Image (cartoon, rainbow, N blue to C red; front, side, top):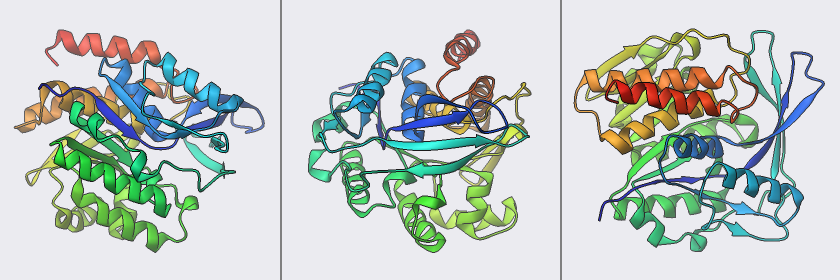
Length: 316
């Protein structure tokens, strides 16, 4: 059977994004790193399944309708009346960089549990994706570990994006310990530059990579904002410069980058040589840059689809 599709496991959020640098007015948008990733892969034409727990109130209805607008399959989500969707207030620095100002979760223990995962879905799809957002809560962590088990048994590619939010962890050391222990299960890993330094407790990329070698990650990607990104594969580092755009809001740029990377792996397979890896990163850099040209993480719809068309003309 020809396996197709991406499974994204996570938690849906409603992002309250500041509309300017005064951080006094907000726009309500669907958010969450794993949602952003799911929207990205879906927009790029890949069948995408989202796994989370939803409620039955107005906010959950908003979330589900937005997911369906993105053509994301929510059939395998679980719904319960007591669940409340998390909210995140995102402020903007003068440099247009975003930062997470506050996090609201009224039902922290209402998460997807391991026996609510359907193994048959893992047998259909090609890539299993998750981040650190399901690792700081013990029940959600067990669910993630079960998802990893199903993915490995079904011979799926496993992709992990750190997306560290330290306010959600009991301590920095706990975050570091859990995330570093889970990395060894992934085929594709993405860090932002500061996440690499934090997890390796180093002060330079070179030192961080030296420590990261112990994890034996087949494909490691590190994003550096406007300075581009690089990957390490089989001991070889491949650097690709960034794309210059008029950045308005960087929310979701890393998720768009990862969505583009997973699109490449899904459609073209594992890159076997540096030139192919360069093409993957080049495409992902453009996808990440496109998202920064609009407020919010899911608003650059036209850019993503047009970008795909442009790169398809060049054989990607």
